[in-house]
Image (cartoon, rainbow, N blue to C red; front, side, top):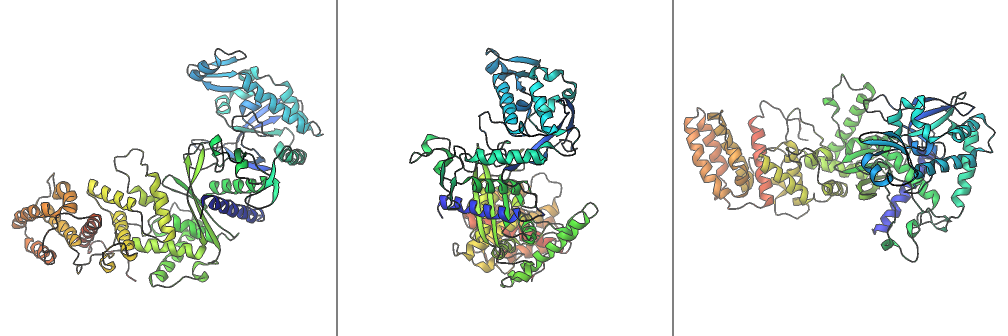
Length: 632
């Protein structure tokens, strides 16, 4: 699928989902002409235009968060002076701004028209020509919309704006309490002293805005055919910003934009180069922002923010998808702290997931009864990551919900490996990616490419990315430590490679637990290394340096150099051990199928070595630690 076609399909799918949500009365999503915005404060205005009070709308958290509110649509304004109706920040509402002293000295100090209101060591509060222009444009917009409204609330706001002097900002006692927070960039809404609701929710204000918006959107607009709907109408020049993508700009970033002459073609500039109608633009940006806000439809995979949705109003699909993409083990949750309803819901979902995996492991296809919803429902996953002021589509998936469940279930089945009682059965992709990050890393950042590559492999049922496999092998060698997550992925990688015919490895050799019958030499050498390590540990428990710390990496890549030395060393330990004859028997059994030590193991061989090492170590403790995996 070409990039253009893929982009159109993504936008089409989002528009259809918007229509589903807009017809669902239980869902709160902005209607045309409105959008969600973060609001920090409510300004109470009297009928005489006096600022009576400022109400903090933010949460009570340690770091207060603004409240999301449906307000008159706020289109992207880039660097232009474009006021928003009845919901704005301090620069537009009060005409003042706080800047760093270095920026002040660089941009404003030697220019006329600036008035310093507060002179701090690091920051200054001031008015300057542009902030005053913002305030004047804000006032002009509200006069143009509210002058005709015969409403005391509207009259009070206009009087406030007419009487306000930006230079009085720091002198106002009502403002003083929240001065720093106000100047931090939060938005304000307005409320008349005798009303119970915000001004932007009043019928008069909404009627005036909707009339202005319908005329304003078509005035001077370029008419063309929409790439998405195929209908002719006003084409969106700028698309609304997408907010909520991790590490993207806090003001939002664009998923469709053109800001360079190199992108122009056939005389069309900006978004006219890829014409999307105003309505389609509104729908796809609104519903994408809605998904990015929803905890039920959003997960983080590496640096990729991932949203998913099903083309239905039935939430069963999304609940189940949330679990499969971000699995939790309800039986291991802290039940005292867990919400009762959530815990019951998780346990039901876990039971469905277990039943689905059991059926798929037997080679059966799942049906709608198995997943408690229509398996043919269209299901979508969209992975987004930041790229300066833009958003890149890291991966895109669309298929039936049933196929999605089968693909992800196959991934979990491939990943299954013998583990401890306290280890989770389902490992999320996010936790898997963390295993590639060095323990010494302060930031813990995962390679940005791995998340997308892994998701593409899982969703398409193909071989796992070699980059991920190499990263896991490197971490095991460097840290000389392999846990059930790393072992599970090594097993899954080799398993898929063999199943797809890309490896000479026999699929039957790659097992969940110890395979004593396996004649694979690297696997046996991994087992041998575990036995030699155990022998050393039994005879000298207080040693600072072990064969693991000195030889693990070289043993897994150049066995012929290391193992003769290790075997000679082991005889020294066995001679002092009470149970040395048992170790000798194990060594002989393992070496019975090894004619010679290979000089070099390739990456597949190294993976089998580590798998054998992990299996043998788990087998040492199997009597103490019963595996949670029950062979079906």
